[in-house]
Image (cartoon, rainbow, N blue to C red):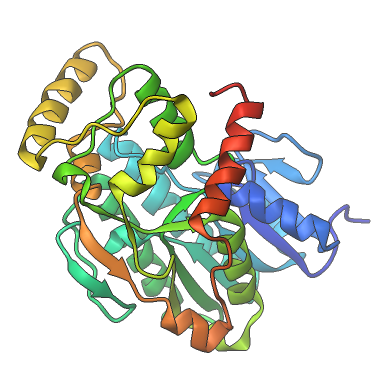
Length: 324
């Protein structure tokens, strides 16, 4: 007898920020889930490398849906690592999913696919734009790979493009900024007037679950973000307040780009990674925000957690983790 239950949901990246939050939410509802990650930290998470996903064939036969959250989310990794993780592994996974008769594949992409040069409100019909570094490019290519593989296949594809996902456990928007501020290595480009589109992890999880279950979601792409935007200075001022450090240092974008380029070269020389790369500077200088009307209309989704509330929850978590 198989240890896997029928009608399970498979979640890749199950030990990560988004994947782990989805796992917990489904467990709390007694929904059978099969997690997949490079390392297992729970009985219902399988250790598997998506570059060789054949190990997943047997458990996949017991699943109706795959939620693919596994990705390399960084502006500091090499092109080769990004390509392998975000594009090639995704392509291999969807091929196996089709072979195993998976009914629906929910792909967690990102709003970065619209590029960093867009201005104003963006909806799902806005063309993707590769301006913004290798992370942006590989997220676009991962979507293209899925669209190509599912074009004539008997599987439903749903693409989710989350905004700037924050909350307890968020590495790029909670943990890393705290570290950078404490080490006095944090500054904001565009004089802190770039646009930030925060979505709390709990709201994103609910949106993904709606997209996973809704008949209206088949073949659709959804932005899941906040309503409008806040400036980067508004967002990161919370971190400074937690640390008792005043306000964020702001500089013109050309200055930030120059400093990040020099710093990245130095880090590369010593074999270290620099998250504050030129691509990150571009990302924090953007002047666009994302329409969530489609998710409202088709999924009935609405972000519920206001920024003050979400950041209060994040602060409590960070203090418990001894980050502040």
